[in-house]
Length: 126
Image 1 (cartoon, rainbow, N blue to C red):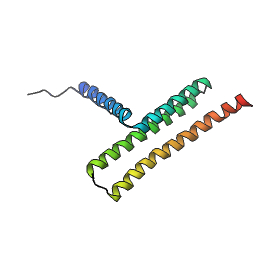
Image 2 (cartoon, rainbow, N blue to C red):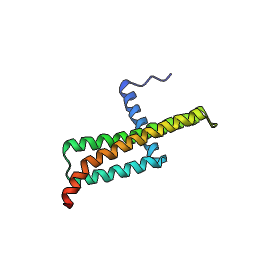
Image 3 (tube, one colour):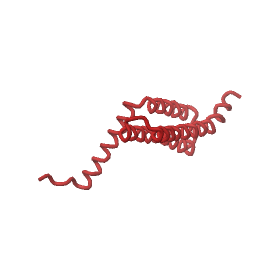
Image 4 (cartoon, rainbow, N blue to C red):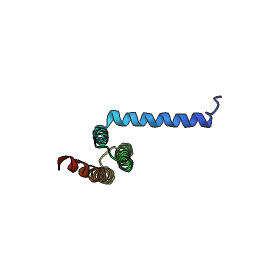
């Protein structure tokens, strides 16, 4: 009989599974890759424009929120496909709302970026 894993081993396994999930997300979901590239561009702009610590906090949070929203959306869509492989109007509404959540998060992220970067860019050009 196999002995159950220790609490530390369980924690290590949970991190491994989480990283596998992140890997699958980036491997199979093109929208996540698009968000990641946009996030990298924003990070580069942040270094070039020397944003403050508080601005970095906002940028890190919104990048994390957008990618997390995309992960939740993907998980919900995959679960819906398992639960109801055939077309279902209810499942369509669930998927649409989940995608809408990603869009709302991306819009909030873009607004945050504009609030942070527009003043810094206008100083350069004025």
